[in-house]
Image (cartoon, rainbow, N blue to C red):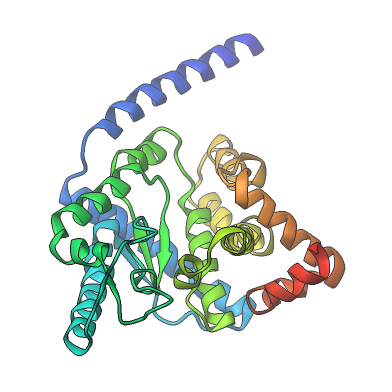
Length: 298
């Protein structure tokens, strides 16, 4: 009987995997995109006040947007800044050392000579179709979400659809992760995204570990009790025990996509802070991460 149940579970998994894979190959219609964005906005509205209540920090207006909006939110602000600087200064051309950082204006200008304009600036100004293609490529390859400047950008491409249909990504934990990045900004009174791309080399990687470790620890530890309201909501809807079990497994750290790399290293940094200073020190990390780095890891 037990073997028969296992076989039936395997058949159900195979069926769901096949159907999910097929669905993920089909581009979403505008209506499907809007429905998905609306659903994630509902999750944001569900968890944001709970995070604010627990931390006493006002996250203010956070908007959930489709990933393609990044080109509007980021590109035009930066191109206007470039053009304004061109009008007010005499520029000398300089080769761009890091052309991959297209989303940060401060790396476009030489640190040695702030009045210099590098060749990549000119390409940035005239190469809108190229940069739009890069954003669309990121949209296709990014499976989760991206937080920047009080906005949570949601990809709608193939990789995201695979996460949605095949792996049935628990968007609750993804939303808490991204809201935790917003929490970092509000506590530190900085822009985490801009600070991230301004740093270089080892310092950049250490900052990434602290920032992603903080969001991952909040998602799976500090804010884990917030999921109980969602679980109760699911129980009230008379969902099966298997569906509830599936949800709790997916939001657990053991099954997280953030177990490796800088997420794992960063989370260990937060765990070390908690071990030495207590759980309440978690909310001090965005302001004091450099102090903690010196005290605990140097």
